[in-house]
Image (cartoon, rainbow, N blue to C red; front, side, top):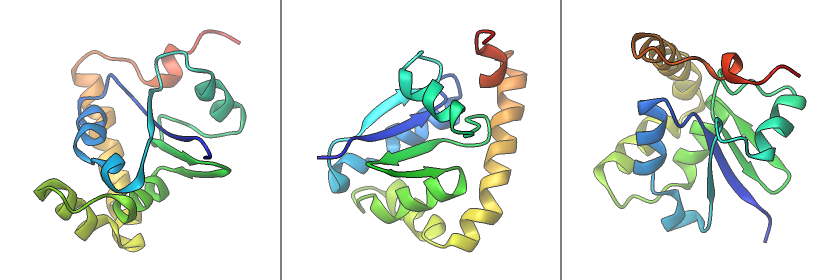
Amino acid sequence: MSPRLLVYDGECPFCSRYVALVRIRESYGPVELVDARSGHPVVADLSARGYDLDEGMVLIDGDEVYHGEDCIHRLALLSSPSSLFNRFNAAVFRSRRASSVLYPLLRAGRNLTLRLLGRRKLAATEPPG
């Protein structure tokens, strides 16, 4: 089976809660959750390939990479209807249009929250290369 990874910001309370609530494993199968601040090799690989993890989480499914609004849209398509959160998430983000309109607002909320909590963005935490 191809590797499946969901890369998110573990210091963002919204991101961490989202990946805990989405319950993707119930309908999609095994998915490795990767904190983008963990030093996992996939984080450096994504960065080298031009993916800005401050701009959005990433779902890797084999050779396919979904970033930002595409990621949240894909997760909505794959998640199980097992909880109220998942049903709400699917109802909103199954629409590409809704994903493209709402995701920048979610990202702005993340950035503001990190600032208010005194946490640095991911790019600010990377070691000099």
